[in-house]
Structures are given as C-alpha cells and as structure tokens.
Length: 86
Image 1: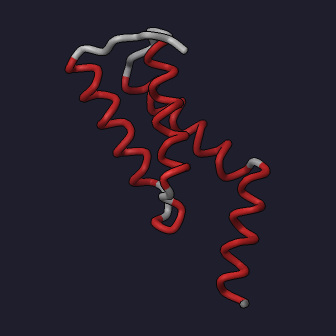
Image 2: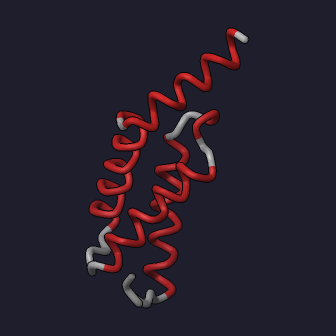
Image 3: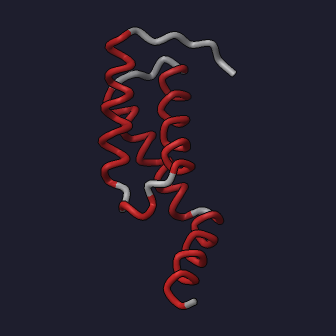
C-alpha cells in the first residue's frame, strides 16, 4: 500500500468528489461497503498523482459501475427482492 500524503486542498477535493458521487447513489445502496469502495478508488487514484476533480470523479463513477454491474450486484438484488417478497 502507498504512503501518499495529501495537502489540505487535495483532501477537500477528495471529500467533495466522494460526497458528490455518493449523492448519486440511490439511498438504499449507500451502504458502508459501497462508500468504502468509492473512497478507496478515489484514494488510489490520488495516490497515483492523478488529482484533478474530473479524473477523480470519472474514476469514482467507474467504481460505481463496477459495484452495480459486478457479481456482488446480483447478490444485492437478490437480498433486496427477498426483503420485498418474504
């Protein structure tokens, strides 16, 4: 794992991007694990030195796509449906 350091402006930028992206997620899917995945992607991209708002946002949105189209999404959908039909 990287030992990147972030100045206050970068931290504020990452926080803003995180909050903006999480706000796009439907409330029922704003789980701590989804938020952690988004935050991890933002931190990883920033650690690579890519620290523009556009890049961080694009990468965080890419993480959302992975979250909602990957194998875990099928499990989440099944759990959501079981709550409705059980």
